[in-house]
Length: 158
Image 1 (cartoon, rainbow, N blue to C red):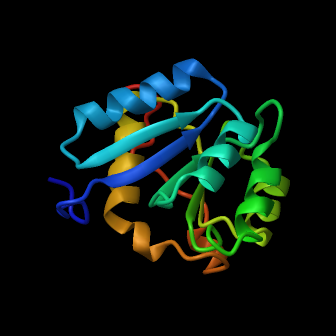
Image 2 (cartoon, one colour):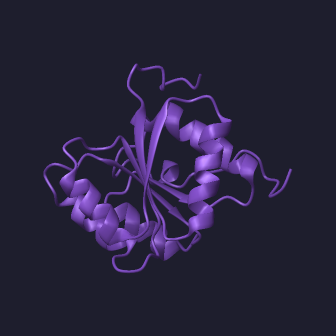
């Protein structure tokens, strides 16, 4: 089992992404690795914020796409960080963008980690394992050098 996920309670994750293929791939990876995770999805930012506001229990992690219809990831991040109940939620930006502007803006808004969507199933496995193991190390406004996730495997397709 992945270190950090041995609790009797599953790690709860909400993935907010409008791309069905990305949501299915994320789900497939969690089935592939041995971890105790409860996964939920939000198809857009409005759906995510309804879930976060209406649930009595805050999830452990949110994987947040930046470019979604109805309410984008940047706006969701602002709402999360300004809400007393949600302000300490671990928010991982999970985007196709690797723009320095997006990285700086989300860092400044208090996201915990920035991940450019990987090019392979194996890189996605690598990232999810690392995040689940080290999630408590990702603090908002921590070292900028650790803010952007760096893949150890350089191959896009193994």
